[in-house]
Length: 303
Length: 294
Image (tube, rainbow over all chains, first blue to last red; front, side, top):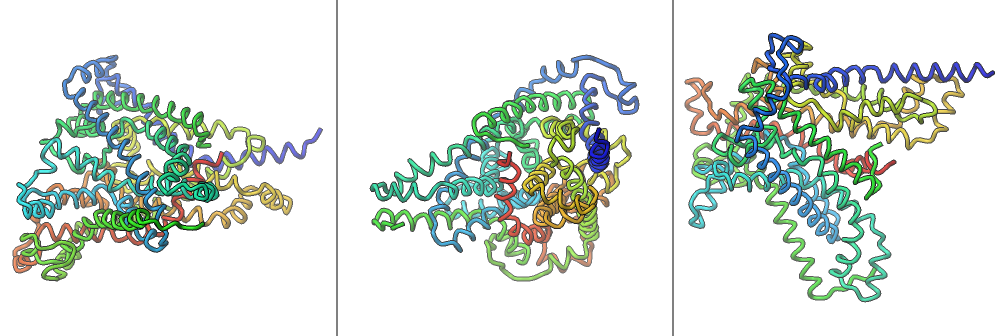
């Protein structure tokens, strides 16, 4: 019998439970509460009747929404946009990291990095405020510059194709810095003696880049690509919502903005929740698969 | 390592410098342009003469916005949420991360709690149910609607608990042999050594709260309760100066909705521009801490 250690352990545990209590309560209300609230998706939800009083209508909301022509358009917009962002989101930071790693001047390197990271920390409200101004067809500096070359003004935010290009380009502008840092760190972690050995064997810089740097970065490239799969249905609500207008709904309306308009503007709570649930379930599957792949391929674990 | 300076290598090095400089300049240009517009005269801005250098330098747009009640009150709301939000988030993060950093042997319910938190990282109820919960808990139009729903950040908890885990177990054992309880150990031993990690999380949380705009838009019925970014959004969307009074007319040759918006955007950027350079070096560290450590 060892009563003393036992008592200490019980005391320990209760203090731990107490420490976790505030976070648990908040998560229970504000994360699990909405998960429970998903029942709205299966109801003809009327706010005044509440969750208990509203009529249950089974899958009618889903049938309704997936029969609307808009929904398929929105879904394909979302996929197209997120896949395009995913691809440039790997290529650009990777290229930039490799170019930066070739710079020997530390001060120059740091300056470039500091500048390139800046937009990452600014909100999409601010960035879209800037974009709307500089891309304006009448007053914007971009169209002023185009006019110097005799090019007709382009309505960047009002034309479907241009709007998509602006979305992808401004996505690079904002997000580039973050992944560049990760890739740069991976390059710095590559064993320098490999380069020295290759150099002695007569390999030039290009050969070293192809046979040492890129293979050395493969794990991190695989990891970031796999993890980005979880965002397959996140085409960037903040960005699209702050830049789009009814003119470009055809090509720029994505799931999140669709849910917002259905729910917050048209008050079709049940339908909007159904679309949201669809998104959450698909995202859940992709995130789970991506974590599993990341664990198998790159030995990545969040805990 | 001996650097071989072949002509083609030299060409690469120079063009690399040029490409990177041009690229960085492109990233910076829109922001400098905005800053230049905010201190230029309206006529120069309208004529398209302003690039990244002020033309017809004046501070009238700034004089105008410091008297703009809606702008000022939204800044107050933003600072309020910053203060409350950051202190609450940090407290919750430490209190949750510390027990979760303990091995299963010491804290048997650890994995139950871990799963409880991790589930929220991979599944959520979506916009409408989230909105309903905030409404049902009576937070509409209250500053707490901007703080409580996002107060627990699971990523930060993971970051913090991984940091706690890297600390040697002897640290805690010696404190407990000296008679310190759990709370005392956390407060006097772990808190002081985790200052750098806490500072990082604090800076990220500050930026999060400063930049947040959507919660203000849906949870605040009255525009006077809007935080700064939500207010800015209404200015960008409406793009008008209807509240300019008659005796402001003389000002109109120097200011317009564009220069005033530019000034407001620039002021809103300033805090972030002051903070983010300090975050750079923690960036990688934080990512590595939060991810690779098993």
